[in-house]
View (cartoon, helix red, strand yellow):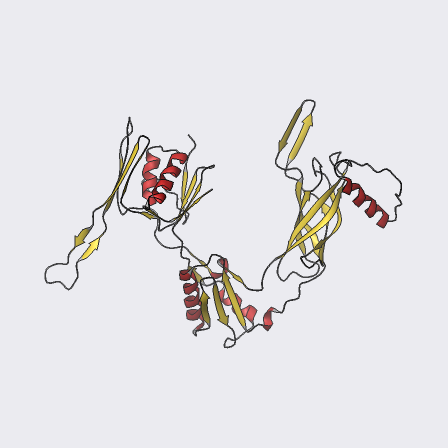
Length: 370
């Protein structure tokens, strides 16, 4: 049976007998937002890889490789008109890179190289000088260098072994920036923080945290995905202000969500995932969830009020030689899964139980199955 790993969103491994913390995740503002205007830009280029050990493109299936090689040699002053060029140590590739924000002339970035012909491997190859263009068709960097390939492709008489993808590779610091993207960040009068995961609660906490740190209401939550910051009343440049607020700690509101990866047998739970009263029978497994609220009353003549406290009980049974696992607590899905773990339930069966509970309306969380 494939072992089942159950993870909580707070990096808590749910195992029988282990109690997980209930505090919400605390992180820095910079880790949950992006600043409007501060972004990366994708670059792409077409190039040629040379120096392959007979694993390059074939002319029959990749005629554009021969055309590209001919054009490159003519630009270098080599006349190959009328010549029949059929090298097997050359491959046509696409080169991609990401230009960081505020990248300056002369700085380097990593590049990825991928074959677009029928080359068997790029191992041992060298990328010839390749211009990298942005979406505006302008050249922002040039790439060149030896390719590092993690995949292996070995063949002998009657046998062949391949591991990974030998037709893809990388060149660390293989591209040099030749054109900067003009952007005057310090000329701004305001900052716009865009939440990577829009949420009303998290956005409100960011607004409150910034205003409390600054001492004035300069932050305003426009919507669950945007927080505006007015810089006109603050001292210092926008860069300095952003540096002072991006490391402020906040509590991120973690949604009640379940993600099931059936292939690896992984179940990830959010902190606030709960279930209502429900009874389930799946195969030879029976699950019964009951809720018995109790009333807590104050002492006689005490200044207090009577309140109703939730009291829940989960019973999980399996016919045969296995025992019944019982959990006494407020009903949470993590406790249910811990009990199923004790019975040795497979990931497939556990996923079926969770999906059925969601369909019955007893599971209060978003369910994502991959």
